[in-house]
Image 1 (tube, rainbow, N blue to C red):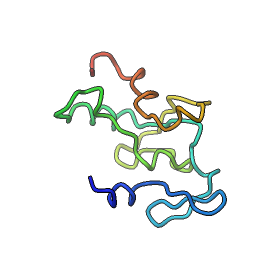
Image 2 (cartoon, rainbow, N blue to C red):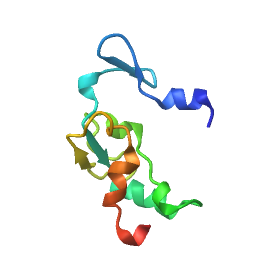
Image 3 (cartoon, rainbow, N blue to C red):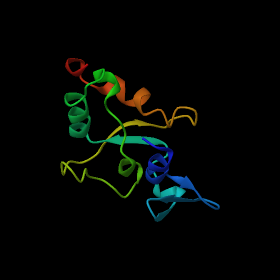
Length: 107
């Protein structure tokens, strides 16, 4: 993936407490910065459809970081909080928080 592709899907810090994401302006308070929410079905899909190591397949979706998003638009399921009250040094490590919650049968 190119740097431009990554940047187009990233949350980019703006002035003050603002962020930009895909052309939308969001405030810091509209993001899940101290919790990790996931769609379990998306994670299962990632694992089932990988050509790599299963434990490396699941990835966090940007939409899951927006606090107003409560359900998965693909599976129409409620997002599940799998980690909260994270320290700043750990908050961006999706695999660190998600891997302990994967069923043993998937990895």
